[in-house]
Length: 179
Image (cartoon, rainbow, N blue to C red; front, side, top):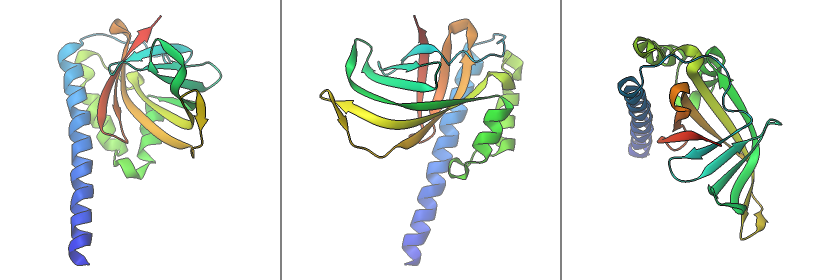
């Protein structure tokens, strides 16, 4: 019993460290690639974004999103639900309150402070909360329980990109504004 508990604790710590390493890698990538000033605003809502994995997400101005597997197929293979966007200090406070990710207010502020040298500010920091309500496959709605997924990262205005980390999967993803 004790070995299982210890193994579980070690796995949880390793997972937390992996998430932290991936988050830091995104930050290092931002520092090395972008030396730009970013104006604070919400560029996400009411826009469409093509993801680095080829998928496509639409954030409607009414708080709904549609995440399509393929940019060319909009009547099948997609998730939809509601979203909330947290920016800057609000994002930091929000994530600090979700203990399962282990991103304290101090850690987040430290990451952002490291990027000040390249013009990244707290106002460039975003958290996107997706409440997945349904999945459409084979042109039929699948019965699923809603669940939340979270993405955190930075908007780079000069490139019209969102460099994000999926907090549930610890994967990095870049979204490019799609017109």
